[in-house]
Length: 297
Image (cartoon, rainbow, N blue to C red; front, side, top):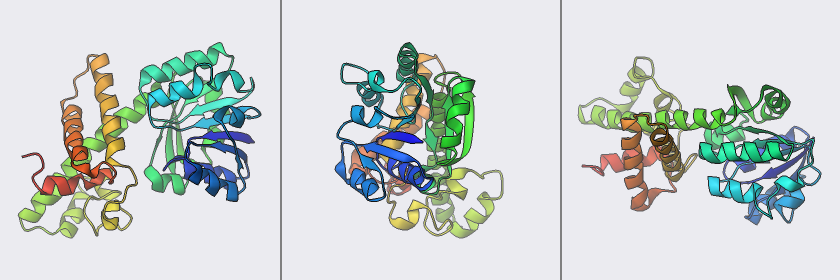
């Protein structure tokens, strides 16, 4: 399939690599030339602009940082919507606000285009291993068309419902993740103070009522989970800045819907303080070091 892939950051680059490996024909665009060069060497065609990338596409995949970037990419006189072929599918994989997502669905449908919102979970490791979870919002027919391609970048593809529900699933999921990472970090630090080794606490918590992904798959202390960023000086798989962004999206959504989420608000506040120490580029699990230093006393 001819695929236009726009946005080649930490997640987009390995996702695009997997599509190339699956035999698809990719035209790629990013403001940063480095990932474009990497993919070009692997067989992708570089595009001088996003508009050029989509002109002959059968599918358009985009993954960019913020809602404002999605609006700039798709809307306006230099947007790509008017240049995407009518039979092409759009999979917008950014994690953004639901208002912008629903706006994009409306604009695409006005242009006669099929679209799904399909944010991802699984971090850089999941993107590299094609083991991502895709949370998809959109019409059933459109989901059926895009699912086979998403399956080549992920292992779990969930149709969440109508337009915007993919984003809803993502921000709710990451609110849980942000909260549990803080709680898990606090527990490991308390265990240490009480004379319990991290290895023994991991053995207990990973197989008991405290079990959660932040402990079993992404443990915030070095040792128990060899693949976790804690063993690489918290080199980012998912940055603290990105976690803060997602928590802000969740809190904004809660305010819009008059929902109560005190733990989400508290987690957002703590990650904001952590990022303000200059650690925003570190992995979000690195918040354990800030907590250990009494960052929020």
